[in-house]
Image (tube, rainbow, N blue to C red; front, side, top):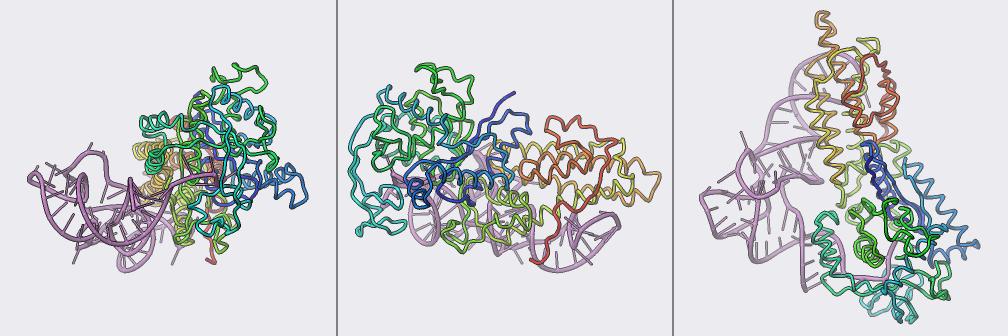
Length: 511
RNA sequence: GCCGGAGUAGCUCAGUUGGUCAGAGCAGCGGAAUCAUAAUCCGCGUGUCGGGGGUUCAAGUCCCUCCUCCGGCACCA
């Protein structure tokens, strides 16, 4: 069985889950479900990033320990993912002992390889943003450009990773692997970025200032700064490195027992550089193979501004779950945004996509099953059922290409088109007319059987994006579960006992 | 400023390597049917494919130029 390892970023535990997190995670979930359905052994990883100054300060402000705050916030994320039907296999937290051990091992490895050195870091620092700003960013007024707060000149000891050493190698890798960073426009940006000399990467902070972090193994007065800590979670979860094992056998040699390298890292375009530059060079420094693909997706925008909580006035698609259901929201997010690009959210577009779900797919299910019940007592007739075989095969082809080529919107469009085709098939066969002509019973049997088979295929195609509804559909078809793709061809449908039930995607009134 | 992308029917967009490429969905108009969630199905678009120039037997599809919009330009999780 082939395996597939995919990741979302781990989300910083200082804030509540929002649409940005949810979109990435749903995208990952859809891919994970698709791969499982295709028979692959999937490891779907997500989690929370829990160290750093912001957490430290937020905890202090609330009078709790940092870990208590992280426990709370990690719970919030897990709860959010439960509500959205996320099927992750592992929820990693950077405060886990295993992760701390792996980060420590990785740091030692980088240092043993001669890629770490000590130097002084000087810059304009904003406490509010927990970061340095460049002269250009703070402008002549010297205020942090995000919140407008003060910045202060800080000069402190840091350790650096020789990222610059790997610049040429990274450029070559990107050039030799055109599909490594997708979409192509993001790949171009990274190459453009690498056109200039790459600086080295600061990887630590003085413990005197930030105590909530992983101490450097060779200097307990310094803690690991965000990048090495957070990004390393991917390796931790892969099982490649066993911190308890002695040096060379820790996992830096034979990776076969582990899940490393990841098949795809998913992230928003805002943290592409981190994943396409910092992370690969760190892996090179540790002699570990690079992830197979890096996918940066776009943002949901309203009008022309990025959706974020700070805007306040935003209608959050996640709020539509109560009225329309989780599957409908997932459908909208996957179907409406061309994977990788930005998309704008509007309630009108949401309703259009919901109507599509109800009118094309939901209604097809309802009318087809109603006819099986009305004309054949609810039992699927034993008759040829492949009248739409060519159309189904073509749809599955386009669907697979969409999901495996990271063009999910196109893949799901193909799924919906198959439902359209099936509606057309109903019109062409006119089962209601066949039912009035006893001598044409064979034709009716054949029509109904074909519709049921097509619905089984549709259940499989929609399951990754609409798992609850797909399962419900399978149940109504009399199936024990949504069939996997490999099971579709030989699926026995004759004799299944179907039930109609209430509409899968009921009309929502009072718009 | 530098680098990159995009501008195709009212709206959202498809259009691989130049030659049925002028398309789909939605909206609109007309019709059919009644199994179905008043859902479905069929028919209807004289769009300068952003403007201009060029290459070619032939260009949304390649080159130049102009206009407009957008993205990226590092320690931002």
